[in-house]
Image 1 (cartoon, rainbow, N blue to C red):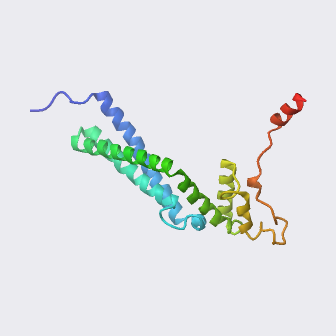
Image 2 (tube, rainbow, N blue to C red):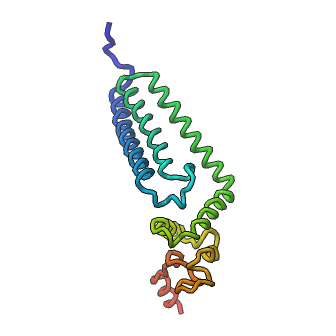
Image 3 (cartoon, rainbow, N blue to C red):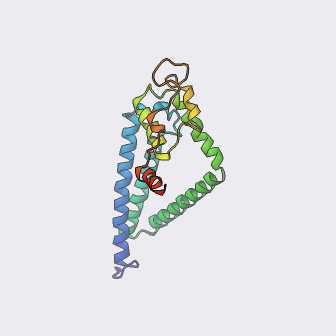
Length: 194
């Protein structure tokens, strides 16, 4: 005897299927980008010298999880396989609670996280001019967050090019990425007040 009626709405079934196909493909692409970055791009090895801090490794792990979850969601939705759909929902719940706990831990230990990031930036400032890709990364971080150095601009004294005892033109200076843009409208606004 064959079932004529499906237990799941056809609309929900195919909507879940197509969303999971999308995330399945995104997961595969993320794994491919992570593998490429891990094996081809070695420019950031000075900054990410351990595997835990390596963003390529994170891309591989996250992409692999997305790939597996997308696949189980696709097959579970298409075949109406309750076991795969339960696995899919349990893993999604676990990931949600892990992200929530990570956010709470980062919020509670905000000062320690900031110190870890500042120390990492300070240690890479030493080799700022030695690696062009690392230089671009540090400049991007400083411009995005409008900061200079790990904690203060004095951190640039650890670099041999920016140290006050160096004979170069950059002695006692900082890179261009430490400089903030002056907003002309803001300056002219004050000129009109006087």
